[in-house]
Image 1 (tube, rainbow, N blue to C red):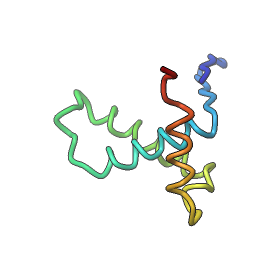
Image 2 (cartoon, helix red, strand yellow; image 1 turned 135 degrees about the vertical axis):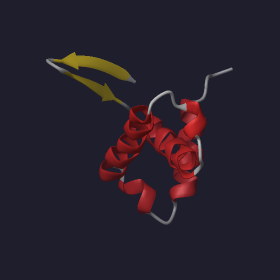
Image 3 (cartoon, rainbow, N blue to C red; image 1 turned 90 degrees about the horizontal axis):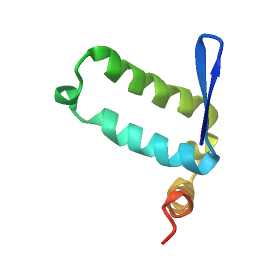
Length: 81
């Protein structure tokens, strides 16, 4: 994972595995009523937008073997013991 400031924007660079883990978490998180966690609705909006942006570039989420790919991605992203 890498973050880079580009003019007035910040670009996040994620591996496919990191992106799969993140989009799965965001999807589950955004399905629940977590409004009590947010100080401002803008924070919730950013998480919805992030999920939407990832959906646009991750075709894996629509494939039949998505669960296998997710499990593999989680194994790769985890801290090594």
